[in-house]
Image (cartoon, helix red, strand yellow):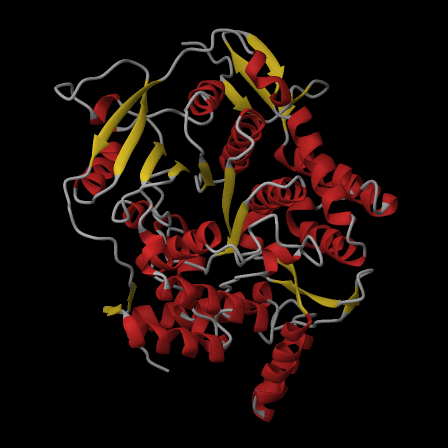
Length: 506
């Protein structure tokens, strides 16, 4: 069996003949910073402890992005350009830079299989939440509670209210929505399958995955379009013959989508663990860029993680300061003591400062990075923000919203994160069940596609490019937290473990 690499890979260091994901990430971030802060750019390359120190460089990048409205686009363009130059695509012994991935030899055709759902039920929307089915006034009341508690931003609540007021938007028979990672636990497939959508599903060739996708489609009223390496008929064993691999069939998927006759709404929701997350993010990015060139009317969709560093509206600083004031004197004393004893490693205050942009507006920074997720995760999610920023600047319709922390299997298989979520309410943070997140974020996508006033629409002017990510955020309360998330995580996790093992209740 050959050990030769295939598909999309991190670059090989020719001198040491090994792959370094840290070095690649540093090179990309350094290039992104080069035009806005040369010293910081060089410091990134010199950093010896990238695994622990990467948050400071991501934060520096956000700070520079805030100050000058032209900076976010500069940062994004140069970061993406470097990434596409560095990552490599292999096939049959040939190698090209990812930027040239469509020049790789032996690009094979993918075939389409179309399957229609059996349901005749009219589209509807509700939010499954803690065993309830939130609809009507009950749904609106919960949105108000989340907003008042600081779990969601006012713009997020308003977007969901608008969807609630326009049930006609849910009929998606006029749209063709492409899901990269269609079977994703936190993805919108279940809801799109109920909304008469034309769903182009891309996921791994796996009978288990496709059996689940097909069952979802057959129970709904949507139409599925799935890729296959061969022509199929309704009498074939369909589930075991569907699928395409984003990492090894990148050019095939790009070509297949570009040849579709319809307008496409492309959603980058695929997730893989570790360094594969960066690779799949780059694969989705390359495909989106290629399809957008061939089909300029395509829209893009991304779901951001709340555990990242963001520019935020200045009102967030006021809310965070109010949160600190509401802490009891005992809590403040204990937190201060713990912080000092641990040399500010634990319960470090989540300080906010106002940063004046050249548009005359003040913004702040919410630093919610979690070290346990690692620099590869941070890079993968930043790549998506960069693509959204560049595409929106170029006049493309871009739907990008921060989704709440969600108790998906990919998250809760990490014992520390699972325990931390269980104790998150200690810090007024809420983690959502997957079915709740699915319903909320599917509705947000519909809002951004249907509402002409949405900031996703390039005809609506942004006062600052970073406002695209601020708008419509569901951060679960992390932006308003009194302490840096990564310094409060151990205490949240301890409580969660105790609660799980001893059924202890606060």
